[in-house]
Length: 183
Image (cartoon, rainbow, N blue to C red; front, top):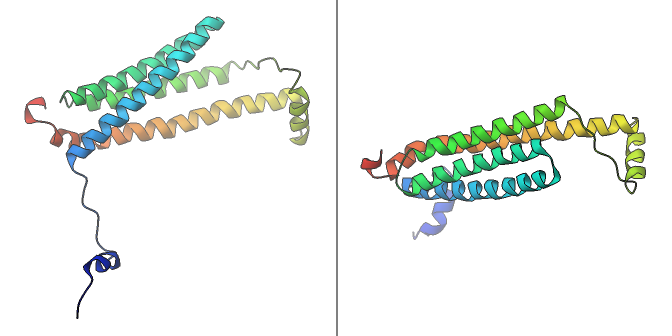
């Protein structure tokens, strides 16, 4: 009896995929850290600049802190590219700095609620939404304001926590991929 081995491989569901080689883990972590670090650095830097131009001192400081976290992340990726395993510490630390900055910003905004002025073009729509929710316009705006910053905090916990855990979990494979003299 002739067996088609290509087909037989798909039938065996107990087969596990082989582990990813440490060299590929290093390449992937460097790529993620570099792209994410540059993205955070660029976007936060632009928002810091816009906040400064608008006279929002607090927003400019937060933007610079977030941009600094992006620079830390990119530096960690650069260290890995140079063969230095300490880059993983920088990558994990960048996520901690980024999370603490975002959490502090959210807590301050939730503690000191500042509802911006509503343009006349969207006031009827907001009043209708508030009425459907059984609230006054000011209650509705306050609810949406708090909901937004709580959502931002929750998403930051998930994203920065997940990315920090990703970097942390790859540190052993990265050490195996790097030459012994860099450890």
